[in-house]
Length: 485
Length: 118
Image 1 (cartoon, rainbow over the protein chains, first blue to last red):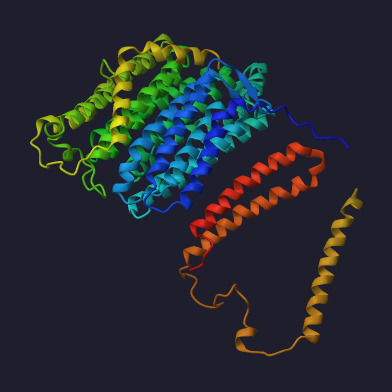
Image 2 (cartoon, one colour):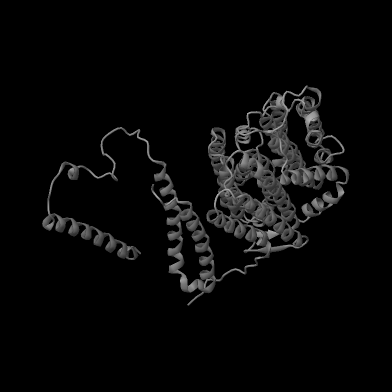
């Protein structure tokens, strides 16, 4: 009997994914067998699991292992992004417990779902086959839809989940159609094979099917990273979703979208860079401008940060437009910084909120600086970093993104970026004006800082400042990683 | 070439004959008590005539989703069973992992009470 040849399977590249999947499934089972009300320790176990997965990822640094017939790879690029995802998940887990208990939706499923999301994101970063990337994207997205609608007693949360699901499914359609057309044009779903095919063409952009495939894939990823004009879902979803989950989905999945798009564009479509650079120029300018201008008018702080998150995706798209090592390493550095500063800012919002979040407005921060000086200083650091002021991580990240663009000759793009960044200072500083220059209208006596949130704030502040003062300790890893992609 | 479709034709014929035989025999030897309810068309237990804008219990959707999930499991088991000998131990292990993952889901659904109607 003729045996079907089984490809050599090397499990090492996906060890962190396997570990997290098994852990998440075990936690799901534990969750249904323990009485409700004792769910907090599921969060602690998953936090320890995230650290263990980070160790697993860290031990694989520097290795280059391909497996599953070239569908998954373990390289520094994937490892760097996996670290960002794990960081985002860890910080989100830390700020979740207090929030979920307060909102009375402390279901233990939250933590396994976060872990599944991380598995999906990891597969997106490590996938070297369009199918692997797509599967990772789906695992990530489906878990995120549930997380967005996790507070099922709350209408806004339900709205967020449903909107995210419908628009997410729509964008997935674009992405999948793009992948299908690319497969039709090149005869392979493997990223390296697509690159080989494109390199053999004298003018790859004259191959309409390939070009359409690339454009549709870019559209799909633009949806996922909330780039204008595909950003419409973001404010509603970010506002309605439980705050810790908003923090998580503004950092992790966005980084995952960038990771997959970077690998596909820089490897498969490297010969068509002149074509997609122009496109990203337009996307970057639109995204930065729409995000920042709309954020100026927001009073709800979660909506404000949602539009700001669109603007930050725009800054990263500047790095895409450049497409050179400085710009692309800048994207990786920026996503890491953004994870620290944004989840940090959301942690403060979690603390200031009351049950049902009636006080999600910027005005509710009035006098916060007098009542809780330490928390207000932390919030100020995050806001300064989001605005891109030295000596914080946000400044260094923007510096590398824009200098990448300048090296490539996109002077105007960098100018528009800097102008946008200047405009954004208004709405970030507005929160600080309320914190320090208005009389307190509230006593903030409901505010309690639980130990996990304190830890997450400590990590976020440290990360934001350390990356701002000594960026080289991380930047060299990013540059090393992008070189070997 | 067309000869390869002969088994399918046979299956179709057998299905038709089986249906006809079953219907004929039950109408010949079955007891007949005609009531208004029994003569009305069967529609999954719902009243066949009435407004279409009725509210369904959400439990139907839950059951439908679970059905699809575990139905897919069965769909994947068939090709594996056909190629079982060719795939060997590797296939057995892979399928074992797949079934265990679904089994975890099954226990979760069961303990969560999603299979209870009330």
